[in-house]
Length: 133
Picture 1: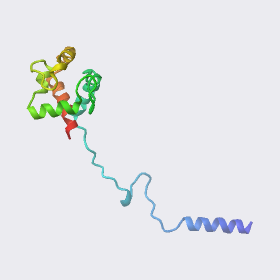
Picture 2: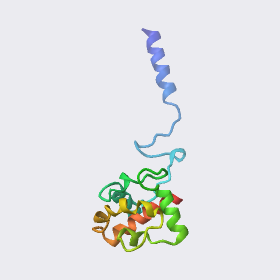
Picture 3: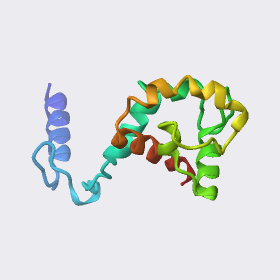
Picture 4: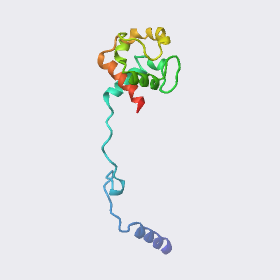
């Protein structure tokens, strides 16, 4: 019994060494994390939501691979190089510049894109250009 008491006393003494205790949840200098978070661009987030949701864009366009329509990267690259206006195209006010042979397929989607506000169309454009970074 004396041995058990001595062992327990020794373990308690060793474990209670000279350690600074911090309140629960308070970070020490070594564990401080930069608390500044990168704010998500609301326009970019809206564009992504529209692209993947109501805009139905993801049905035919993938980021880096042609499916039914050209990839997002291809579209953004061509619009940037040629100074095209994606918003006006989505309003059906501009000619196709990426792949005119796919225009007839795209025309069915103008029923959706024409219902979007200018802000929403600009957000789609911002989202698509974000793939060029």
